[in-house]
Image 1: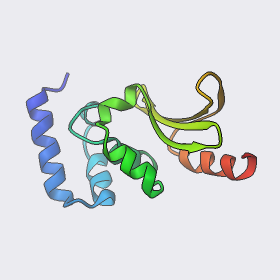
Image 2: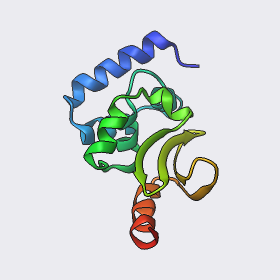
Image 3: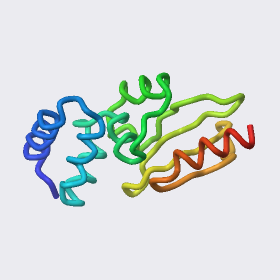
Image 4: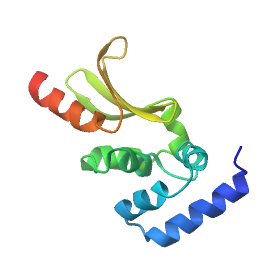
Length: 130
């Protein structure tokens, strides 16, 4: 178990070293041991956008980015709506430390994408299917 104070110090040093550069922060997170990285990615010390960028190494559109920036990474346990397409919500979450994107109407899941390729797969799916 990672001590919260140590985690907060680590987060602060990562932010200083990356100087608000998303790509550099993701690279710095890669150097952190797995247990500590998982703790950071599910904490209140990062925002959900920083986790999204870390997972997929690309930025979503501006609206999704703003939505993610307003949420702590810890909110990803419940999922965050990052977009609406027709009657569907696109939800980003972390399950067991892995990124998941769902397309759902609120009751039924139309599509589910997992892993580091999930964002690209979801974009292709939306382009082809909806």
